[in-house]
Image (cartoon, rainbow, N blue to C red; front, side, top):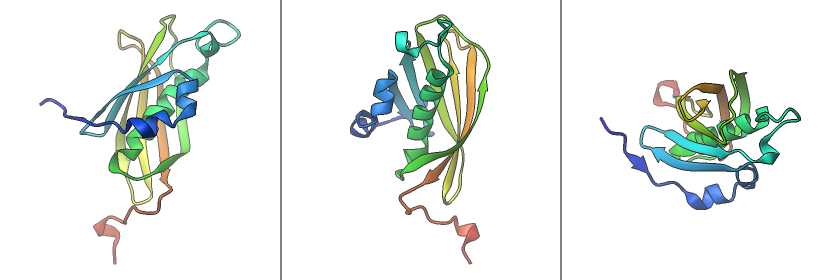
Amino acid sequence: MEKTKRVLDRAQIEKNQFARHNHVVVTELLEDETVHGYLEVHEDSLNAYGMIHGGAYYALADVTAGITARCNGHEYVTQSADLHYLGTTKEKKLYGTSRVVKRGHATATVKSEVTDSEGKLLFLAIFTFFCVDGRVEKPKSEEQ
């Protein structure tokens, strides 16, 4: 079954100066709340050893995961993240994919992966996002 693409809110993405500063580009949002993007590696993406800085991996994961959390039309901020640096690459582009694992009435849990062009897993993060717009209602099973 083919996944349907949703329209990205380009205006919202363009307002994210952190993403632009870190060379993160979001490419697609799928109907199943999966977001794809990439990070172009530049000189300012490297650490003192000439390797891709861990913050670059985190930036790509956090930006794609944040957009994923907002797929339901609500506003979220990162509350916590569990990070796993698994490898590195000399490639000049990192690829990120994020998807919702679970939604609650005030939080969203999102899994984010960063790979190289061959699909080698370089970074894994599980994020918890907190809804800041106050509009998410409790699931019916929790209402009394």
